[in-house]
Image (cartoon, rainbow over all chains, first blue to last red; front, side, top):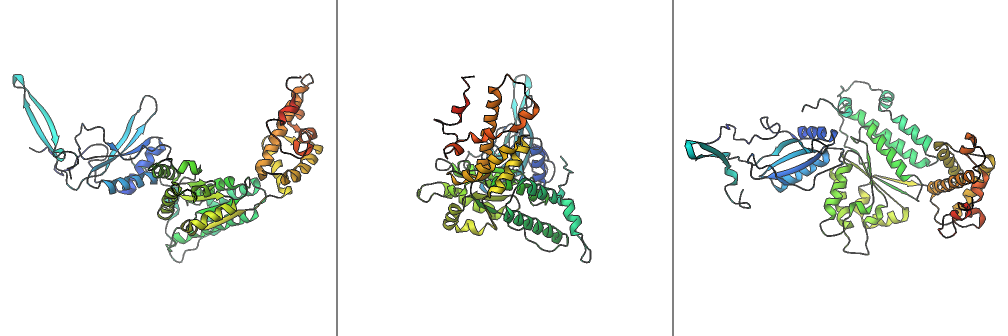
Length: 145
Length: 326
């Protein structure tokens, strides 16, 4: 059974229920992050499992930037390198007490998003445990589209 | 997030019908460029050709902005620049002002200046240069990238030098990201000429070549006045005389770096003044004493005494200071 996801789109991070952001909108979002002095990263993965927290970083995190154009340049570079992967932009807040990503949104999706398979495990006492698997990660790494 | 904030640019560019009239003066006042130009005039002595060129560029950008309001096609003008001149002629200062002017005219979005040299751009091993150069370029986007002593980027005597890689990336960015950043190269005239000879692509991508002339003795004296005023010092009459004698002598000596040499001379005079006041610390001091540099503070310079430079560690200024004897 497929997870209820009629549009066949992974929904995680900000804005994921909206149509994909345009480059202009991405620039505006990055500008907001820079205004708050957050370090912006570009990350990519081919396994969109919701618990796959750590995506691969594309290049180094970008500190001390004033203008979003440089980050869009990096995003486009990443899109060129991994056109069929998920790419997200995260903004990391390093102020004491936060030290966590404050923004995260997808800026690139693969052409087809197969979704997730739901597993049910029968446990003792007729309890049922659930887990999901992304179809996208069925093949071993390196052989995925 | 809904970033409702629109930048100044976007507001400005409301399209006008063909028969509308625009007020260039009003536009000029709105951009507040005059303020920066005035600052340039007041703070920088001399440099007439440079100032003229900057005013021309400001005019071009202003007219360009009006043209855009009439929906006339005007491609973003290339504003990459090359500053040549001897050390201490104000290249960095002008670059800073330039960033401000370009920002006020809406040519760059942020108007900050990222000042780098070869070390910041070129890496030490294979594959190190590109990320390094790109990181700097990203930092400079929305502002001005100022590459000091840019001729060091290209070292023809070492064919394995990574500088070429950096130049290539720069060239690409200068062409494709003209809206995003302005690159200013700076360096000595002869070396920059050689640099451009071996990198013709670089030369053709730079629209403005500004040559910074050396200062005359009079101009240097005015600069000294400005520097002193900034730090709340003043010269006694005799000290002024000593300074105006000092400058031509210093200009003849080696390692003369225009305004920078003057600043150093003033710094050493301050040092001697402090020492002089310290030596007579049993006397009461007035405000007057603290702000006045006297003739002795200048005459003690080795430039006067034996026509050599100050500040050699062996027999430099520390000798005539006698900290221990007091």
